[in-house]
Amino acid sequence: MKVLVVGGGGREHALCWKLKRSLSVSEVVCAPGNPGIARDARCAPVAAEDIEGLVQLARDEMPRLVVVGPEAPLVMGLADRLRAEGFPVYGPSRAAAELEGNKAFAKALMAEAGVPTARFETHTDADAAESCIRKWGAPIVVKAAGLAAGKGVIVAHDVETAVSAARDMLAGNTFGSAGHKVVIEEFLEGEEASCLFIVSGDTIIPLASSQDHKALLDGDRGPNTGGMGAYSPAPCVTPAIEEEVLERIAHPTIAALRARGIDFVGTLYAGIMLTEHGPKTLEFNVRFGDPECQPLMTRLRSDLGELLLAAAEGRLAGKELEWDTRAALCVVVASHGYPGAFEKGQVIKGLEQVEAAGTIVFHAGTAEHDGQLVNAGGRVLGVTALGDSVRDAQQTVYQALRRLDWPGAYYRKDIGHRAIEREA
Ligand code: AMP
Ligand code: GLY
Image 1 (tube, rainbow, N blue to C red):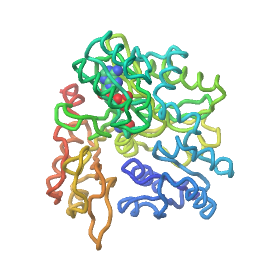
Image 2: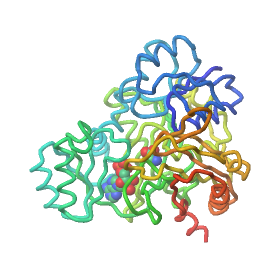
Image 3: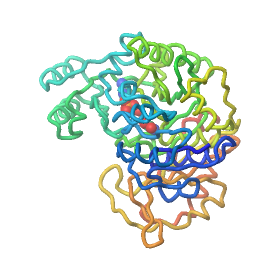
Image 4: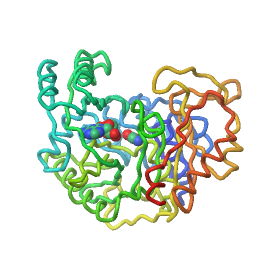
């Protein structure tokens, strides 16, 4: 079958890479894609947020299945539009995507369904937000309710930082309209993990566990980013915790949506904090994680095309996933300066040598300029390897990265450290 993938980042490269290796798939088209994706798919120059352009592309290409990678087009209703045209789509409707697109909605739904999560209040008024923060004290977490590319969360260790973050958000200074409503949350302590599920109707199939590193600097310090690296499996997610997250978080959430008449088809991503009182939900996303998708697709043995088509057509019940028993680890190579300002157009060389050292290089913010590969975004590459342990996979990636020829590259040197400490 022909599959159309929407998006052009590292996650979509991993999806295209895996789809191309699926027996059920004969052709992959990706919009807009990137130079790395072009090795695995035919790229069509339509932006991931150009809803009308994507509907027209689907009419022209007539794919058997459309897979939507990023959250923005889902929140804009792309899946609804394509379904109305008769295309099977892997990705939730606009209403279901509110789980990610509106943190106030997600928190209210969790409260209603009894899903474990941090205590919270939602505010649109700065004075009310401030008095909530002063009443609860620090540490405390302030979140823009709308979409902010993973950056709309401030974990404040003192009250004044929290108050000014909330005021800035509500005034529209930091995240535009995404910050016109804020969620103030109790600070949770523990180790984080990503628990992803393939969902269709009331069938929910867990993917292997994973963990990402959202902080910019080694030791999980510095500002939050979209994710600086990830690995799978995450040894902190024991089979008992996996079961608990499925039964106490995923199932009640999907059931609460169904009770509101909202059907979920796609990936439910629960960001989990493993607290001393059990797993609690930090956030929901309605798509694969980026970069968690890169190690997950590297480990998945099952036919991805068949799986996602079954989900899109409501035939997911009874499917089972097969995984490589080895670990996979992905290190994100970013442009120096990210998540702040950075220079674009720097030439990147040496990727063949990096791959020859036993890795797969997934492309994110790359572009081609005068026949040369250049950086064009904040997160640029996801260098990924398999290994008998997380430590083995990590060593392969970092040794391979010595061959990267791009002076403006920045990457963390400790991706996987928690799992490696556990392995030791
Ligand atoms: P989110 O986008 O909501 O997952 O938040 C981004 C990151 O902020 C999470 O991965 C956590 O590291 C941190 N975070 C979010 N909410 C909390 C919380 N209630 N307590 C502690 N840390 C949090
Ligand atoms: N890796 C975090 C995310 O995809 O939201």
